[in-house]
Every structure is written in structure tokens, then in C-alpha cells.
Length: 432
Image 1 (cartoon, rainbow, N blue to C red):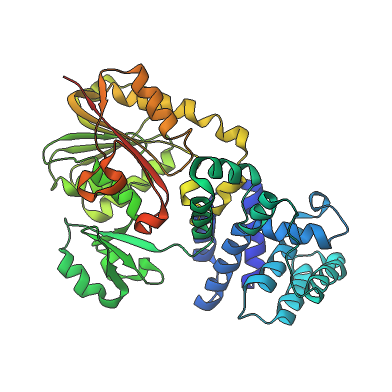
Image 2 (image 1 turned 90 degrees about the vertical axis):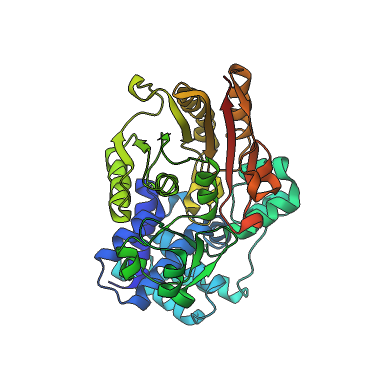
């Protein structure tokens, strides 16, 4: 199977199953017989089409005589793949982008569409691959940044035009890969010596930017010397401030990055109780904890909205709640496809989890709320609603040691600040 054919199959599955792109791709590539070069091509085309889908469909709508919704899904994705190569893949000759797309119609058993695919792509090519932007400025901006117009307008209302443009432009760039050193397995010096030029230190102690291929092949990864975790997620976990000997609850813990950062900072003492609703996600936490050899973590399946009396009296509780994921567009571009109606249901669930988390906190203890979105109704909206209903909690600075917005009790982290994903953290102390 070719890299392009696998990319088309994955695009079809992404639409049908509404699965996360990174999970689908990792599974498919691990089972494929493609060499490393073709694996990179497949990943680049697959992610690229998802990221730029709105831009690609604007082109396709202009050059196709048939409405997009009436096109066969495989043919539609073959065309998206072809247009993407013509627009964004300078290393692929235009004639190859067209001819390989026509070949795909045959290998994907859609040979009857070969003439149609050829005509659409050659028509676009004849017009020098110029994107047909709408006349309305915001509609044109939505096409340029490949984002739904409703989301664009929401971001502009919340952050202004310049910040929104910077955020959306960043979302279309390759995401840096950050890792965190595991103090239970090695020192920073040992990790730096072992990985050499493959890592670059950040301003956050123990955090590095990694430049490597398949990390699973690195001996240091297999030995548990480090784990992958975005900087904003590391900041969130460190901000909780867990100390040696404390009891910590992580109510929505999968895949376990924050759990591991919290536990590692407690020097193998105390206990971090990590929960997640889905059984297969609980296993992800267990696998991470086992590889990192963390002895102070207990993992169990649990509903974050339901109180369990046995865990009351915790020193610190983290509620990293399910969210729209708008802050991680560069990792999971398919979250742009979620409907605004579905997202409107999230704040009620988020508040329910936060209120349940509050029941576990002892007097003087810390409750922390976080999301990987930058939408204010899921962030400040939920945090402020919680404070109004719970005067027994007071806001406290998120992570004053890092300064800036983190000196505030509610902090929105944007990519421009640390090079990290978009994130939100709010921190409260229970009076007493």
C-alpha cells in the first residue's frame, strides 16, 4: 500500500469514526509495511489535509461541478489530498500530485472518477493554484486559516484580531515535541548527556524540546528516563504544588502526563490517586506509571462527577476536565470540526466535575481547574460560576514563580508565551 492510499483511508476513517488523528495514525503506521520515508509522507499528507480542510474545500467547491456533500467520500479525500500537495508540498512536482491522485482513484476502486479528479486538479493548476477567497473579510480569514467562521468570530471577540491571527497561524505550524525528565530514573545531566543534540533545554527546569523520530526506539524512553508532555501541561501539573507526603487526586487523569509530573515531584512519597472514566484510558495511565517506575500512584476507573467518600480530605485535587480542545489544534486539528452546539454542552459538565472535586479538598487544601482550550465560556466562565456558588473557596495565584499571567488566579496560556499549547488554569484554596 502506498503512503497516499493509506492517508486517504485514514481520512475516511477520521470522518466516519470521529477518532483522534494522532491515535489513528500511530496505530496505522505501526501496522503498516511502509518504510520510514513513506511513513513521514503519509503523516504529513494526513495531518495536512485535516489542518487545511476548510481551505481545501473552498478550492474544491470552486472547481467541482458537484456539491461537496454529494461527492463520494473517498473521491472527496483524494481531491483534498491532491489540492493539498499542489498548494503546500513544494517538494512534490505538480504533475506528480495530479497523476498520483488519478492513480489513487484506481487503487481505491473509484476508477470511474479518474476523469473528474484529473479535470478538477488540472483546472486548479491552470489558474496557478490561486485560492478563491470569499469577498467578506471574516469569511476570507476563515478560509485562509482553515477555521470555521463561528470559531474565528468567537476568538476575535475574546482576544482581538492580532492575538487570534497569531494563535491560528501557530496552529498551522508543526508542533514542537516537549518531554519531561523523570527524576525517579535519572538526573537532568544524565539525560542531557544521553540524548545530546536531540534535546534543547527550556526555561522550565526538567523540560526539554526533543528532536527525534520514533521515540519508542530510544533506549532512554524504554528505560523511563523521560516522557512526552507539552510545556503547558507540565506547568499545570507543577502549579498544583504537591509536596512530599501529601494526598493528591487527579480526577480526569488519562493519559497520565500530569499524574506522573505530580507524583515525580513528590519524591516517591505520599500518594497520587489517578482516575479516568474509560477503562482503556485507565490502562494508558497504568502503562505510563509502570514505565516510569513511580511507586506513589494508585490508578482506578472513576466518574469525576460522582463523589467517593473514601477519598475525602485530600491535600490537593486536580480537575483537568474534558473540553473542546481548541488550545491543541496543532496536535489535533480535527477538533475544529466539532459543532458549536456540542461545545455548548461542555461548561455544565465541567462545572459538575469542579464542584465534585471541591468535595474532596480538606480545609486549607488546593483545588485546581484546567482545560486545553482557550474558549472563555469553558474557562473563566466555569471558574467564576464556581466561586460565586462556593464562598468557602478563595482564588490564589496559579504559579507565581513563573511570573506573567501565572501570577494571576486564572491564567490563559497562549503559544506565544512559552511555545506551548493553548491552556487555562485556575487555582483555589479552601478556607479554614
